Length: 246
Image (tube, rainbow, N blue to C red; front, side, top):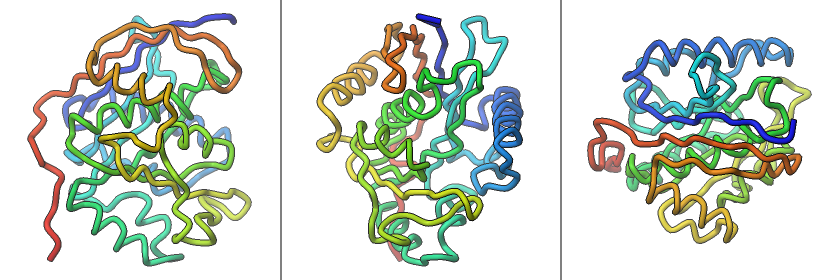
């Protein structure tokens, strides 16, 4: 397979319940195949959380979901998955989220892709990029994520850094004892001053033109994929997810 075409669109979870259900079904199947039965980001209550935005990767005809991710903002109807996942191990995560929520913070979570598009970077990379792209529309400044060891490098491309103050130099075992997770944080999703130059250019290009078609090269296997981006969010309220410290 030299090149494949996919569509990536973004929307608030409460705006498209049917698409959320399709996202959940695909993600659950991937987790079952991997032998993972319980992760905090797989709590389906996010479907009803207006602070959750879905990044959905589909075939061009929209018939099949191939992967995606969620960008869940602090200040919604539920805590961030990273708080639930790490709070029992290291309570400092609560203060990090609380302090960053003043300028708006979120977590990129629930990343997955089907075996059909394995190696294209659909879950590990392009969904991460899109999460950073849409953060501007939502009005948040920082983004947390929990990464598997092999995906840390993709998070670093968009400007994330390992949050070494949490856990054991930023790592702990999750969602089960033989899986290592790394906490990363993009501190400034607005300026992207820590992102790699080429990735910053692509993110800024997408923010300027939220609907575009572009042939991308996967950083995983250097395979080409034609991506049809549709990233315009609806009914966004300015400063909706900025909170005040009390």
